[in-house]
Image 1 (cartoon, chains in turn cyan, yellow):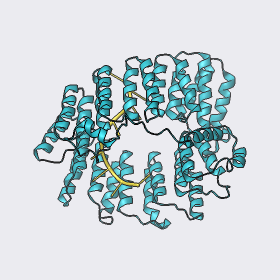
Image 2 (cartoon, helix red, strand yellow; image 1 turned 60 degrees about the vertical axis):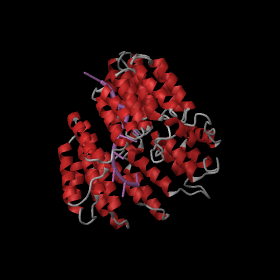
Image 3 (cartoon, rainbow, N blue to C red; image 1 turned 45 degrees about the vertical axis):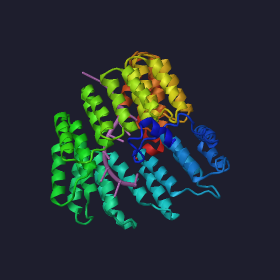
Image 4 (cartoon, rainbow, N blue to C red; image 1 turned 120 degrees about the horizontal axis):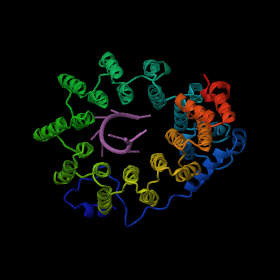
Length: 491
DNA sequence: CTAGGGTTAG
């Protein structure tokens, strides 16, 4: 496999071992998936269609449970939170198998995502009882979920009280928390925290990079540069990542001119320029509409001794899809295969989106089938985007065909899937469609997704206007009578 | 689960 890659790329650039470029074993295909693969799907389906009480009885003896298997199943049930937790609880009574700390973390993550904080803390307590944790990972998950659901202040409180749970805060956990805040566009909160604790945790370059990135995410490159200035003044040297963060920041803020200047300066100052730098450039200029410049940079990097990665190809393919021509994108896709790269889900999604966008739905679906014979399966994003385009085209039957496929397979629909389909049910202004929308609404709640009030009202109004008073009342009961909402939606 | 590059709509 290594050899194949070398000959494909040429011996001039032997340093690809560090690149995160998976090689495509064109000649020797990978071994087929293990038998366990089959089991996972059938177990998942069993869990999905069995009542909780019965599940508790028959699940423990169904197969030989291992932490890995449980982990896989929980991942599959990620978009069906209540079922995932039922599954988790059903194994509690098992005689020989006990959940691993990872499984607990996973379950806690699922409960947190459903904002079922009661279950969340019950799981934490259970973890503590059997002395499995909670560990730093557990806290990281809870902090992230709190921040993600707009409770940054609660997260800060929790972080500051972590030591009471026996987990000393260190630089690592501090940085990771700063990152969580920054990624949730709470750079200001992160920076305030940083200012208070910079001495206590002896903040490092990584802390500064995280903050700079946080401001870049908010398109505040001047503030990011300020942060870095402060870093240098305190005697910490920036590295490639620092520069890449700023470069990306310029593009994000639409400052392509500045990005170009910055890139030139990196070259002039002989800073290290790596594959991420180039990928950022190819993508940045491409989406800004400068396709030629984007291509030039792509060609330039090879001459500069920097190998493109799959991400670099993905960037170029996306650029060609969006600003040039899908057929040119396919040429690049083929080229990447010839060179021995293994396309990933993103590669396919970008290409499939490009095809859908120009109305070539059939070819899009062809690629969707093709990815299965490759090493990647279509994911929720793949399904969602094709479903979305089918709906845009008014091909509701085809959209629902894919939706059904998801429900039965190993890729359960998520919140976006439901929203896409529900929205689509309003375009024809047909009574039947609104009933379907109502059923989707009920299903999504059942699966642990909380629809927006807007969605509720929209469906209610639709049903009332089309003479579905009976069904509307049912939905209304679901919304107002919190007693009828699943447990995890109650206060 | 300690930082940076590809997917989400015009």
